[in-house]
Picture 1 (cartoon, rainbow, N blue to C red):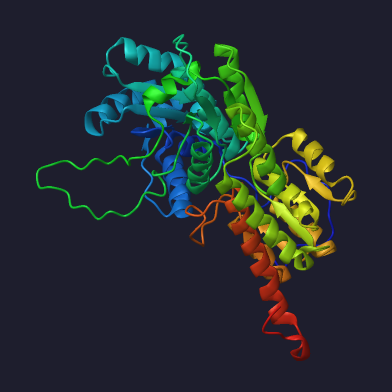
Picture 2 (cartoon, rainbow, N blue to C red; picture 1 turned 60 degrees about the vertical axis):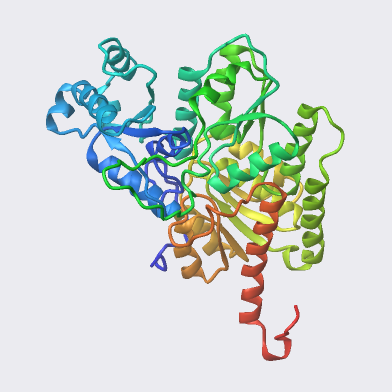
Length: 465
């Protein structure tokens, strides 16, 4: 399908081909689903909402609920205030959420709807029932990416819910970043192992990886449409009493942590996503310092030992392999560092999310290993494909859209990041922490060894590799 991509690279400043990102509202919708009994609301046309919901549904293989202001020509000309007021009334009456999380779209941003004023007026006029919430964030799709949208909605949670109750608690706040529900579950497990009480927000575990219970709905009784997961409002309101905020992934989580620090003086610590051995080590070290203990629990130490054992056993298959990595910036930064620790050479590293500090960080990781690596933020998969045509790689790692490049260039491919539309398992098995690192090792090693089995001549085809 992409076999006609030209090898010659020319400068492009005003054209994106095959973007390595999706738009802001998808990230905002995903973050909103991490609040218990929250209904995400798209302030724009039905088409935008339908696309965003379907994209999340295809990735998580779960139904995704969201409502829309359902703009028509009238709203496009006169603004969407009337639509949103009617939507708030209908949603609380019909679906009874605890929170409506409103995000904008390109259309409502271009019109210039002032959501803060609309929501405040709706509350003053009694359209928001007592004890219920309407929160919002701005997510113009023509800027940033789905990671930016996630960051904006998470920051919106801080702006609306954070309170200084002057009841200092031993708990910590943890913002997990744009990761899978399984990753959020693994992060919570590590916090529990360290005996650190915490408020994790947003939290999509048990929302987008909820078990199939098959429980029948009683006749005459309305089903509860909201899953059991998500951060409770009372916990969000208590984040202002915590000791510290740990934010994983600067692109997705930093703004919310800084917003909370500015409002409540709770210190923020910004870290990489704990993907791979070095980033996980740093995360565990911060947890040790926060818990004021010197050694991690034996279970965590054992997990690390097992991961190191796999790395040593299989080092010969990773060493000196050229790899191309693309996707969300926070994930790509940690994964690039992980690849280097395996002896691999990430010669192409690319993200679709804007941010010069991405380039600087990757250059820092690769300066002594692959000083000539090609690095690009705000890049696209067309450019990545051209790079690979000029110098092939042994392994390609990224989201589902890379399968076309892998097919065209006959490259082993590991699906990682968002979105993954053609496989399952990514939302059930973590890639963060030592256990997640072991799963990543398995996936990368399987891809390399499957290729070796395919390509080896008969005399080198072995049962035991």
